[in-house]
Length: 133
Image 1 (cartoon, rainbow, N blue to C red):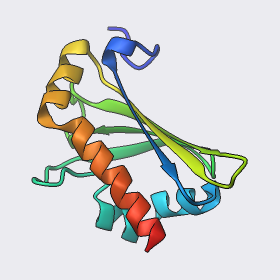
Image 2: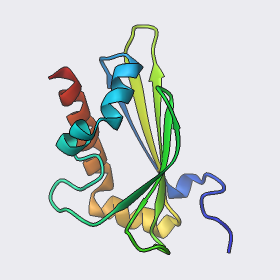
Image 3: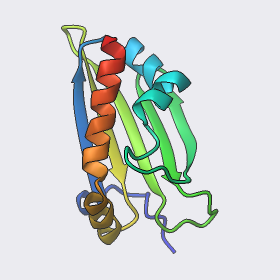
Image 4: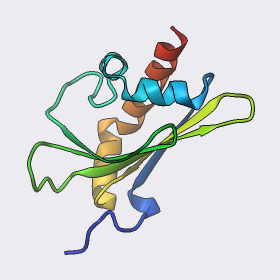
């Protein structure tokens, strides 16, 4: 079976972006800070908690984090890839882009129906508030 993460496909992807009023080193540091992650709920839904396993595949400080996200089941068919990039603008602000690549178009549709976009935007808003606080 082919690896569903080998190629990017628009019909399997969810992309969220947020302009943050902070330099990327500060945004990156917040993204990997366990206190910030817990407060803004980076790895869990707002209204319900669920078991999930995050495996970090690549961390390039101040630039990129790549991880697989799914249940603790070793062969989770719904596991998806998340790539977070941190792009500093000339004005010192940072564009954080979070790309989710799901294993199928159908699974993408399910997670959108579940509220993945809304939860993701809430997470990014929470990160902005945490940074501003």
